Image (cartoon, rainbow, N blue to C red):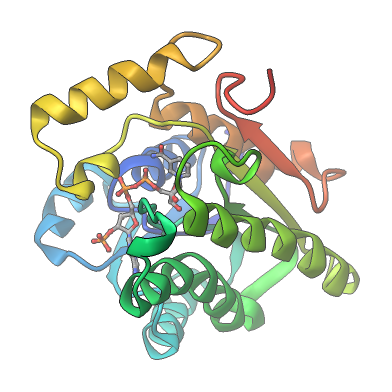
Length: 248
Ligand SMILES: NC(=O)c1ccc[n+]([C@@H]2O[C@H](COP(=O)([O-])OP(=O)(O)OC[C@H]3O[C@@H](n4cnc5c(N)ncnc54)[C@H](OP(=O)(O)O)[C@@H]3O)[C@@H](O)[C@H]2O)c1
């Protein structure tokens, strides 16, 4: 029970990496609030997570939503020991395809969402809390044809450093996790056919040194380490979990 008696908030916890992390945190003794926008999946998520979970609706791009979520979490949990600012999306963005709407979508979900998540929960973070940001392996290199998402995630990685310094006096640790290609519903939201999606995944796997995509649990275990007191000397860093894709 590495998170016994701890309370956690996971944004974007209704699918993929966030949902897997919520399950692991609960199994390790935590109470966990997860958020998402699509409430059609909430009953299913509640059934999967059980009685130690809160499932809350909100858009990370809205400061009002994040303040309401923070208030609901405070009322139920009293305070927070762990936040996983995980909600995010990735989109291809060749330079000539970038319109203002796409630019705002990518930057707002990935960067604005993280900024206002922290601002909303800041008063409720307990001394010694762990705040984990979800970045991406695509920001480690320039070769994935996903420039704006990479730039947004590079900004998030930078925030982990700046906020670590800013909140040293409150002993709040900020660290990032950079997932590689992980088998979640995210890629399915790009509008590819099932056939094309499978082809994309097969081709992608060939370029991963370990030979396959990651699973959501691979990131959940990294988040568990950063959330637990085992990582109390780890501050402002980024843990890359990508099967070597950006490192070898
Ligand atoms: N999968 C990968 O290969 C990969 C690689 C590198 C980094 N990542 C990062 O990992 C994180 C999780 O991705 P995933 O693969 O688990 O994706 P996913 O399965 O699509 O889950 C994304 C979650 O975020 C929520 N979300 C999306 N936009 C939101 C918004 N504006 N406000 C609140 N919640 C929002 C989604 O719920 P709703 O749609 O209902 O809002 C869902 O719960 C993201 O930050 C992503 O960039 C993923």
